[in-house]
Image 1 (tube, rainbow, N blue to C red):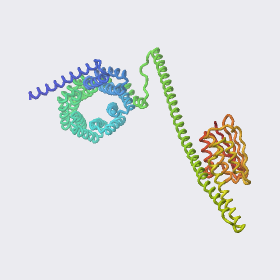
Image 2: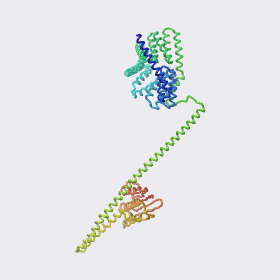
Image 3: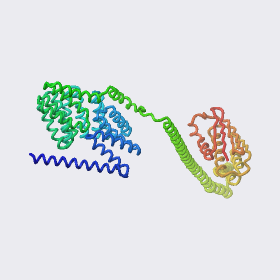
Image 4: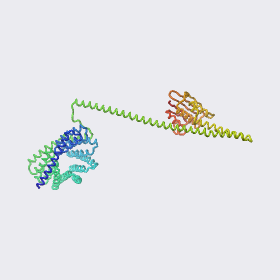
Length: 598
């Protein structure tokens, strides 16, 4: 047995030496000139190492680390350190300071949406509310933490929340739910091989068993928990277990062991500066003394307990904790430190200067963005217009080429054959002897029809490919075209001004086709008897009007622009970047007004 104890003591000593060496190496990293990431990581780990064994050191190291994190604008590390400093203050009995740190940590992590780090802070805040007996707030924060752990599929986190929240139901006298949560947590911890969590579940179950006066079962659970915690050398957890064993032995009536365990717990609590545990132990020792009839000791223990209790729960602290929830839920902090007036003014001026610089930079960036956007839009619009113009030009060129081909085919093909037919008929007339005047008249009619067909083919080919436009200006081409069409059913008058000089071939061709299309519409569709054409060139370009006295149409009906060729006129004028308007009503003729810039 002595050999086993010796081996156990050697093992504990190794663990302590290893922890001390680890602490020294972390201090060395912090004091070195290593990169910030290594320094802040070492600082956080060092705070964790002191968190449950020296609360004052944890707070001191944490405050130094906070300055480093803020200097490097590392909000996540600030949140981590705030949580750890809050835990140290919680166990030191500074509940108001702890609440402030927890709320600040939550505010940062909620904005960053860092769920993995946020869940433990909800748990710590829930424990604080549980301690101040605000049980609804405690459950609310436990549920927040539990939801996150379940989203992350974190079994250890779920087990921890089940353990912690079970205490709330214990306070509500719902022992069935409390035991259910502790047992479920223990099973999860056992499956995960987390012996420390198992020990906490055992202690919590024992607490309920003590309330139910099942002292032997409670002691069995606590001794098992103590064995685990002694093996892990967790002085904080060991102190809690001694306290629970003292309460169980007091209930059982074994006052000697109760005093022994409570005294051991107090020694550890005093060493790690855990006043709340000391207060609970003194309260239990006072009860033991009362049962033994030693009222003097009972009074002394109760006086010590009251002194510690008063330092933990002042009216001001309780009020601050209650106010913190509403303050931080609205993300508004109160200014707690007033700086000197001159320094505040300098900061204000600096802030205004920086804000002005940021605003100016924002305006410049926005202006540059707008200019770039407008430039891109303009380039895109120009490219679209260019492509549209190329497409229209290609269509018009294809149309003119096709007209030219048909005109040549009519002139060189059909026209030549008609001329040959006329010559053959004339030769045939001289070679044969006609027996009667009727035969001679019939032959003359045939020759006249062929002759008239030749002239018609020639006229059509010239209209489709006007020689006058190829040889002369637009004015002559239009007049030649009109002269060929003038007859008794449609009288056409033409007025031109400033068209003596040749224009760009595209302009001449488009305007000629527009006149052709307009005359064709007036003749075929409008049933007009008069048509007035006016084209005037000035410094702004070419303005023109084409007016008939036909039956007109509803110019507001867009379908009309599909059926009578007006769409062709619009397309051609738009190709020249010009404008065209139609003024017409049923029964009152049609006026086409156009303008083409040159």
